[in-house]
Image (cartoon, rainbow, N blue to C red; front, side):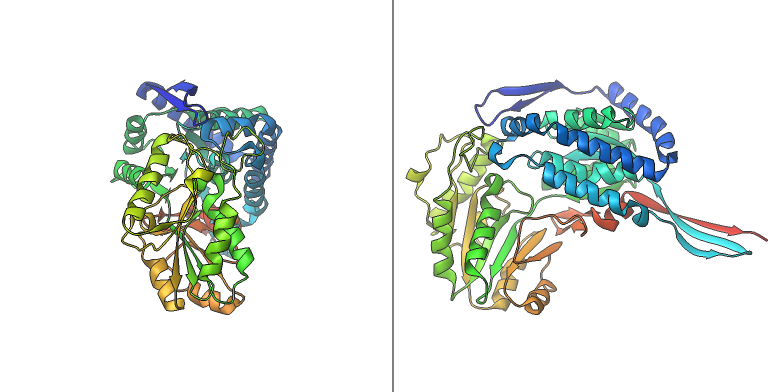
Amino acid sequence: MTIQCISPIDGYVYAARQTLTRVQADAAVARARSAQADWAERPLAERVALVQAGVAAVGAMNDDIVPEIAWQMGRPVRYGGEFGGFNERATYMADIAQEALAPIVIEDSDAFRRVIKRVPHGLVLVVAPWNYPYMTAINTVAPALIAGNAVMLKHASQTPLVGERMAAAFHSVGIPEDVFINVFLDHQTTSDLIASRAFNYVNFTGSVSGGKAIEAAASGTFTGLGLELGGKDPGYVMEDANLDAAVDTLIDGAMFNSGQCCCGIERIYVHESLFDAFVEKAVESVNGYKLGNPLEHDTTLGPMAQVRFANEVRAQTAEAIAGGATAHIDPANFPEDNGAYLMPQILTDVTHDMRVMRDESFGPVVGIMSVKDDAEAISLMNDSSFGLTASLWTSDAARAEAIADQIETGTVFMNRADYLDPALCWTGCKDTGRGGGLSVIGYHNLTRPKSYHLKKA
């Protein structure tokens, strides 16, 4: 089978790769498993240094990577790629590795040595998405390798060059080729490998349907899973918020990367006293965007990664308008081709009966609702099948934390949004999935505890 990356820039095939047969995939798994033991025996400091060198080697490729990302998934080159976040996350995980993986010594006396060690799972499969193809991959690749696992990376078909770049960089600094393997697999082969217990741990970032397929394949195998399956992340602007900062950050969180962010803002609730001013400023902000070719440096909004993604957002928006929503952005300001290039939109007079406020949009549209108090905002924020992040805007940190305690979500921000702090666990609840990445907890999920009870006399 051949997978193809259809570039959203021009609709033509940008890259094509042949998938592995089951026999070839089994052979790759066997090589990785064989190589893992020697890799795990290397000193932790050596593994850390090699991963850090691999990250730096990716950074050295950035001038080529930035336009490749634009061609593959449409992000404008003006934003300079992902190396800043890629490096920040890998560096943090490298810095905490020794402490996070340190044995827990219960007793070390003349009579007993009792200790809990963290040992690698073995072979970790990372299934990475296209929207932030480098940063989402490194979240698991770096700590998995540092912890002593072998890693097999399967990247989204929309971004096939990313895995190749990462593998080339990591191999160039001395990480063995069989310890970090980039593969091209079709869905069925991937499911069959998981079902046959080829992997000791699987990390998947993608759609709910994709997560269900991974979970179904792993059923009965007891394979560990980490699943991040999307979100419908809310923002709540309270009456004491810094209005300008709230507009700037929330609208950027809704529109950046053409709305294709795992923790992008998809619905906003504003206290009734600020509602009209918020909407006015939000519309002014969005009307300043330029939709166009992402290879041009003045473009601030590129195409969506695929035409079908853009059509889903168009459908949600049209349904909302037909149901009584008010659209505030004039299509005349954003000529589009009805393909992957999609205009941004702000909607008011929306309700939770509309799909645009309920289903994941993953595009440049946001609904804004007026609320009278915290209780109403909390109820609306929790009225979702997803739970990834929420963004609270207030000058009162105690109030924000009290509200945060009541929100069903993995992360709560105050006065910021759409950011992944590598020191904090990246996790979610409900249909957003299970598990947790980065932080000390990320290491715990990529290893297993092993207890030693050694009687000396």
